[in-house]
Image (tube, rainbow, N blue to C red; front, side, top):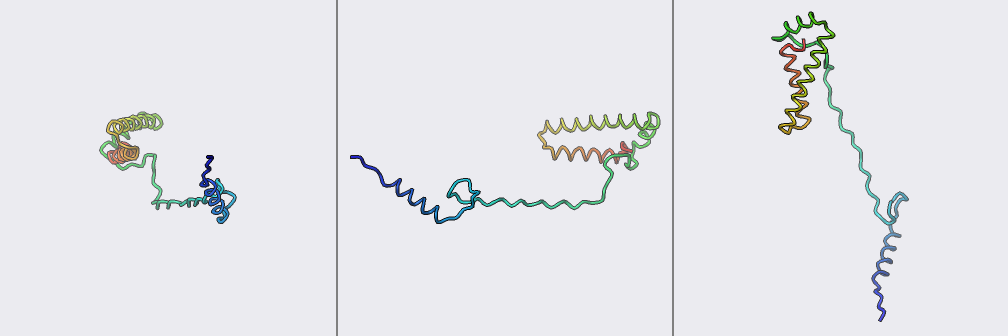
Length: 128
């Protein structure tokens, strides 16, 4: 009573018939597998940029603190003053970063807050 099912034999014949009727390139990873469509790389459009603006430097408008900033820069010297101001900006950025961590804000929001702080500093005259 050695019964052998004809099913594996029939499946292998069907598979061979299907595989021979289809033509695939040699680059197919598995013989008889359907070739996968290659993803089309699409380039994102470059944002339209406005005129170049000064990111660093002393091009701020006159604000309420401009006279104090100018007198302090004249007393300390420009190099030492810029070091001191850089440390102050760095500390303020760290405070903003810690605040964003506490409230769970993402990096995009944090960067927006830092940019807003810079704009406010320019309006108040800290960057004069």
